[in-house]
Image (cartoon, rainbow, N blue to C red; front, top):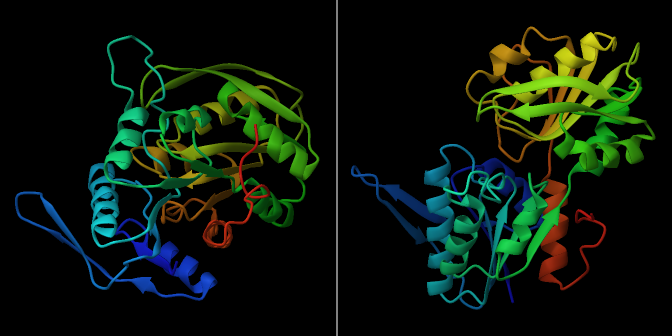
Length: 312
């Protein structure tokens, strides 16, 4: 099968980096939006018999980018592609993996069903918010991790860190992975989510007094979790010199206003979303293109992904 890569409209720069790393070009795709909101997707060249990889994070505006991904998958299948893999570096709705009140949708399962209906054969994602999402798919989900690449960068940019901090209990395993890579102890903040934009924090488990902290999370959305963690760290006597690292930098809503006044000396994210930390945040971006290119190459050649995937 011929390797074919198609970029959606969410992050074409990342798709181009991946294609360049693999030594191939991008298949052209026309995506037209009509005045009533409908979209029309058409591939510009043949993919018949090909091994097709659609690179499209479901970033804001999520509905538009999700629809593009679904239509691209359907177009590739109807054009005769032998295999269609959705490469979704940032996977929206991964936080919706269960019912909390009993009267709500399980958004992650709905998106999984939509991708199956669009004839995808596999999904590749990076640092999902909830690993339980894998169980929703009737086909393989390859869960890659950017932690080694981010840890390497942090070791060079901020070699003086003394403790890794999980901003909530859900990020504890993630913090432990960073701790192993950087050979640092781990602490975690006690957090309770009040709403989609608001959280409360109360206390920290672990020794942070006088230490320079590295806060790690899978994503920064409105930054309420990070801001709460910084406040708890300072109250516990941590040094007012904090580094923050996350795979997905969304920076939506009041994120910049929350982060700007905090004593954050460095903010490191990847390019899964395609947005750099906006000024005045002291940002640094690590590309996941080498990770994605290596994964696509392994899948195309039927080689193991063991060293790239997230292990429990």
